[in-house]
Length: 110
Image 1: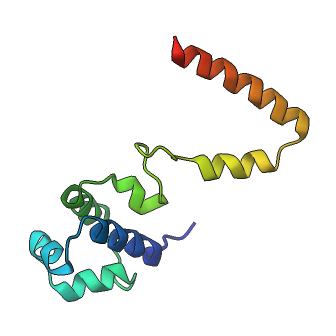
Image 2: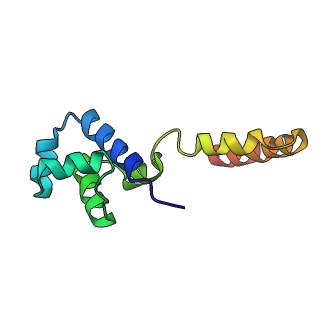
């Protein structure tokens, strides 16, 4: 599976904008040029995990959200992936899954 740097860049940009942080502020924090931030956000420059971690720390978000678009801490974590799997299941397996989920949530409430 290839790394989609363009998608990672789009997620960085969205997180930055949601925090109302400019490219200039992010560049200053990372001690890089604004041009480099622009290239990251457009997927032109490849980013390493250390730099991605620095950005996640500065933006106060989960690094996983840049990589897979979903954060473990997000209320909708894995919902789309689970939905895709369920849509491919037979009715009988969906019923079984439903019963299992009821048991799991019952245990969570106790």
